[in-house]
Image (cartoon, rainbow, N blue to C red; front, top):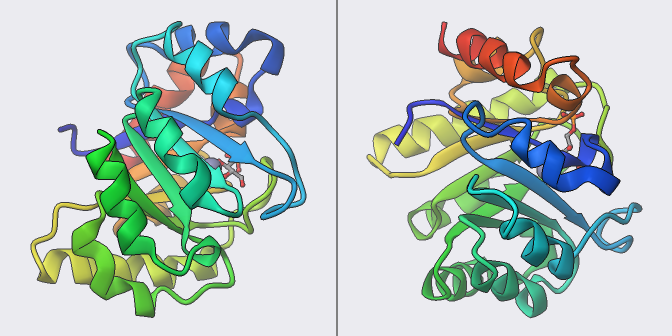
Length: 219
Ligand code: DX5
Ligand code: ZN
């Protein structure tokens, strides 16, 4: 596995040209981050399972599906069955994160747990052995193009300490406002997977933007 994962978010791409957006980052990105929103867990609506099923056929890039939805038990396994590499659901959206993680792994994907801006990560640290990915939101979930919140890095540091102390194999992902001027701080706090929407798809050359972020995160 690469030491650093860069996951461009198609939320910032042209939704009429998702296959082109995927191809534009092939060879440069490690994962393609797919933001699923239901206008209920967050006040915004994006795409769902049929689009992910179709897009899966259009590119070999591993999909990192980020479910910002209520009732993830109902929908998350479908994304695993559709061939997603990693399926992340929100801690705030379920009463039994471990059970859903087990379901996802049984369905063939990695399991991820996301922690939104206003949620304390402490109660979830003991659940980390059941997960492959822990996603710390560095904004409030719901929209791309928001400003990175440095105070969320305290959670990243706490998770990093816990992963290292327990020798756990868990990716520590950050999502929201990750760009050339913020990625190094997130890396220094202990993140090793970086979602970037605007910074990648807002750039003239998305692949070059990814290479730049990787260099800054690795420095
Ligand atoms: C927002 C999404 C993010 C979003 C990030 O809730 O989870 O993945 O695409 O966009 P930027 O990188 O523009 O902050
Ligand atoms: Zn996301």
